[in-house]
Length: 322
Ligand code: PBG
Image (tube, rainbow, N blue to C red; front, side, top):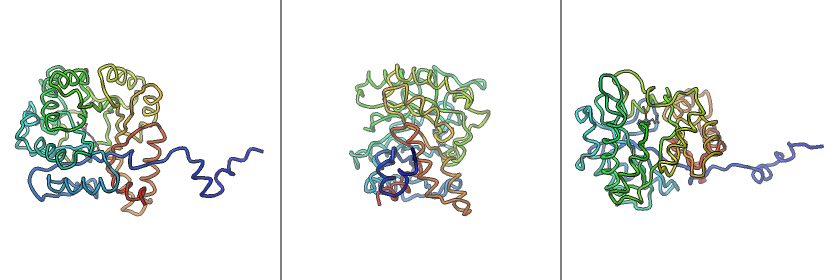
C-alpha cells in the first residue's frame, strides 16, 4: 500500500525528502536611507524596521554580510522640502541618496546593491510619474527615469530597480545605460507590480503616499493574471535581467506562471504589509512570528522565485544560519 506518511516519519527522512530549502542566498534586504549622520527612526507600522543614515546603513550592511545576506535594495527617505513635480532631486549628483550609494559600493564591493527607480519618493504629487491635469504622463516620465537611472549607475551600483510601471521603461532605460557605457549595470524590473493595499506601511516609511487618487492607471489590477504574462513578455524583450512579482504572498500563482514561462531569474517582493501583518499578530501573541515568517518565505520560494526581497531577511538569516 502506498503510505505517504513513511516519508514523514522522522526528521532525517523529512529532511532528505524536502523539495524546497530556503537559504540566505535567496534573500535581499530592502533598506530605508535617511539624510544625515547617526540617525535612526523606527517605522511605526513596521516594528523592527528602521530608517537609517549612511553611517548606520554601512554598519547594517556589514552585519548582514556576516549573516550571509549579500543583496540590498536601497530606498531614499526624502524630506518634503526637496520634493517637486519633476523629481529633480532624483538625479542631482549632490543629493544624499546618490552620494551614499557610492560610499556603500566603495565600502562593500562584494555587496550586490540595487536601487529604486521611480518618481514617488521625490515627487510632490506622490506619484511614480509626472502628473498633468490629474493624468500620469508616460513618455515624459521616461525621460526623468532615464536621468535618475544614469545618475544611480554612475555611483557604481550593480542593478537598477524600476518600480514605476510606466510602459516601455525597461527598453528605454536599457538604451540609456548602454549608450552611456553602463552595459554592466543590470535591470531588475518590477514586472507584475499590482495596485496593492499591502504597500501601506512602505508609504509610511518613505512618507510617499499619493497626494490624490491611486496608482490604478499604472499598477496592475489584482484580478489579472494573463496581463502579468504580457508585462513579462515586454520586459523580457526590452532587456530585463530579472523579472519581479510584487506583492508576493497573494500572488504566488503569478510567480509560478512567470517561472514556467521565462528563462531568466524571477524575484518576488514580500512587501511591507506582508511583514507588518506577521509582526503585529506576533506582538499580540496570536501566532508564532518566526514560524509564520519562515513558512511564508518558504512558500514564496516553492512557488518558483529565485530570490525574495523581504524585510525579514535578517530575522530569517539568523535562524537559517544556525
Ligand atoms: C514605489 C514603491 C512602492 C513599494 C516599492 N516601491 C510603493 C508604491 O508603489 O506605492 C512598496 C514596497 C513595500 O510595500 O514594501 N515606487
